[in-house]
Length: 403
Ligand SMILES: Nc1nc2c(ncn2[C@@H]2O[C@H](COP(=O)(O)OP(=O)(O)O)[C@@H](O)[C@H]2O)c(=O)[nH]1
Ligand SMILES: [Mg+2]
Ligand SMILES: [Zn+2]
Ligand SMILES: [Zn+2]
Image (cartoon, rainbow, N blue to C red; front, top):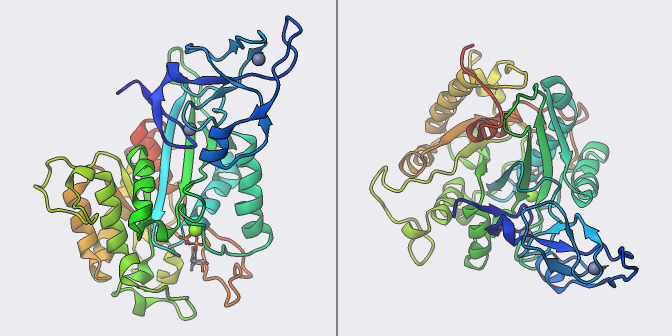
């Protein structure tokens, strides 16, 4: 249903009027007070323990409601499915769910961390963007689990926990993204809530986890698919000496990950074993935009043509640059053929209405043999391009068509 909205934490959809409230559990106007209690739904769905105010329904589209028991007014709106506290203005501002998918060790977690760091810091202030955590938990978790280890410790991650290992939960990070621009009367709200979830590669290799991931993918507004060029047979020999070559195990090869993601987005066309069934080109193609991102570009940088757009200094600013992006798109498509990954292009072309190729490097350099960031530090290249493309597809970021 068009009016349904998706929870940025559990990705389940529901009508806005179904949003529940949580009592503040402090004395209300009548002097009576509700007691904090355990919330079993929140424990089961999110693994969060503790005692919280009781949940009540108000059947309102508003941002506050009085508790029917103690009359205290609450502004804590919660998801009817998982009982997570919804971000302020949820339902009033654009709400976009972004799924980050890719094979194990393709670079998803490093990329997500560097992308968010850049948007919060460097590119953010220079580019007229603002990004902040939409809830306290995202803030502390982003710092302690992602940003601090990489930026202060210089440590690379030890593999994301799979959703299955994590008790069938995925823990998205939720941010508020804004573009600095003058507010026009009647203009769309300036903020967009962005929910990112990063899966473990193994999540896509077992049938058990397919169901969980299907919900996240099916309700995502945009997909960022991370591919490691060093997993393509034609690119491996080109890797800069000292690069760590990932396994190219069958189940987790880029082509298999893309096939599995595609069949999750196209459930009616996948076979019982989760494999893609052939379909007529164009008919029922997937409308979710997918950014297909070649990560770790630094490892093959030296082999790129000196005139390649992937060696050019990208244009900056608070806009998405269409011409530059199309140059990169064509260049990556050409490289794909060279790297013997042409079947990736065929799958995308046959199944997706909106796909775009990108080439990025989150670190800018190979990590050391001890899995530490190189002594030269983190030097990201083109990391914001894929997200800005998705945001431009959603209409949240303006496009600059001419060069
Ligand atoms: N050369 C290079 N290696 C990278 C880059 N990003 C990640 N890596 C390597 O890829 C490994 C896996 O990255 P990670 O983000 O944990 O992969 P994930 O399993 O997809 O989340 C890291 O430990 C690094 O060795 C990059 O930008 N350049
Ligand atoms: Mg990871
Ligand atoms: Zn109450
Ligand atoms: Zn929820």
